[in-house]
Image (tube, rainbow, N blue to C red):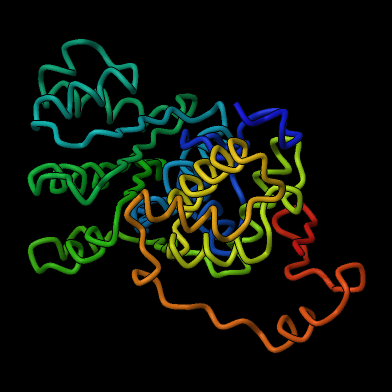
Length: 307
């Protein structure tokens, strides 16, 4: 709709978890390294927690893309299953027989055989939305990590969820599962600088230049109203570009962003004002052509400059 108007080849702020648009902050890079290491056959449980919309699912998809062909990974994205459904899903994902999906005893026999075979692929289980997993399934997952072959192979387990997952693991009834956690990381909301870098990187991936799409004040407003949550940043940006296109506005200004946030029920009172650094306030008194970039540096492997 607005792509050609802003010089874009595609929409930069779609909500689908496309790894092409993954933007690496230091914490995202660390989380991805944890996921890849855990999926490579690391014994024990890897835990990734973060608020909704911080990019967990996109990181999981990126890790799956990078996974070795020597691994068979089951990604469970809807964990509200019964015990029987859980084993049926696992058996199908690991390539076990249909009988293994109906009988836990047969499932365990085939699991032991797969782990004992050095030529068989490594087995891994990723549980998304793990904060919603019933207690009985969390216990089954813990028991799966007990399965270890004579050659030291076991199932790699990754639990991905919202902060409630971390609080559940602190409960006394899950202390045995928590003891199995060998890697743990957390995704937190983006800072103002990382919000600007997130916007710049996604726009560049879509073939455009962020400085032609959003003013500096607009970026500050986007950060304040989104509270640094990447998914909300994308929603605000996409709607702001639609409104800017309708108003023939380049770049999109702070007033347009604020109109969008009001329509999305994201009032400015929901976010704390972000103080503008002294250097930025001083730069505002300079002619535009002599100002230093507001945000400049390397984000992932992309260099960006945001005025």
